Length: 345
Image (tube, rainbow, N blue to C red; front, side, top):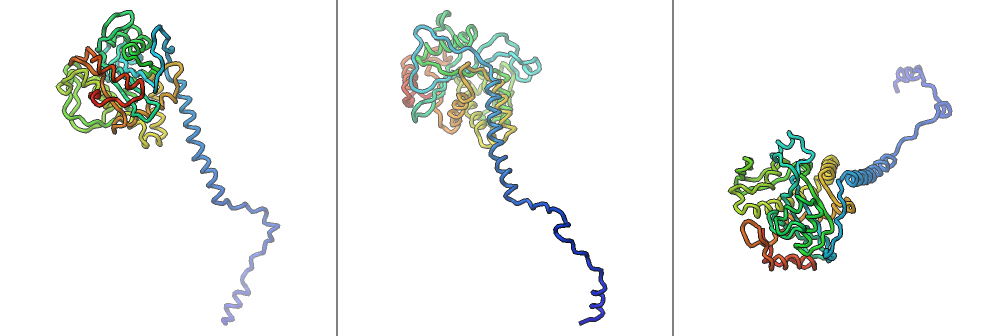
């Protein structure tokens, strides 16, 4: 043993010993469990709070119209649920700069470029989405036999709904309408929608062009796509346009219901906010009704929804094929599958 080292140790200054009583209270060490529980509560509760607030925001922001009035001879409710979905060409609320960016012109009044019936069955039958060409000539109450589009122009949603009900024999349960600006806003809210075009689409009336190939369409380009009928790419004119409209709606529904949209609070909010400000619905309809429609339509792009145009007898889609149209609407009325020979795209 080194005695010099021992002496140095003996001579070292000793630290005073402090009793626990003089140290004061010692802060307790926070356990991992104490941190995890608040974190789990936040993860579980915050999405619920956000979803509840978003639900209220949509419900309070949607434009409302009076419920469809009853009239003598109105069809009785049958199997399933029927939506009348309308794309209005109203420029209301669009400033000149926005209208110019959307290439929609400055026409007064309101018409509809899109008239659809969405049938949601009560059984396991596949949902159905049917286009009614806007130039179809049908009996319009108070106007005689004329284009179905005129019903909306002169009488708004109530007269259009009555016209559709009497022409199809189907009772309309719900109504959804979106205008030009609202449609473009919905597309932009989901970050655009990918579409694959077989050939270039050039509208000789508006001068707008969409290139061939797969691409992501933003709001203005999407509006160009669903409105185009004066193009070499749409030789059937309105029949091609309504087919493209259904194709795009399917892609938009799939994008809106995708997991990347639903788990992204910023994109989910943008979609809900744009949807609420863009939509016109019945007084009796709410977010739950809209959600059921969107959820049913999400399978359009993958074949999970039957899509077709009401059967017509001429290339301009002026006259319906009465026998085939009757069979189509009867299948919807009874929640039966749509016969394959009635599916036209």
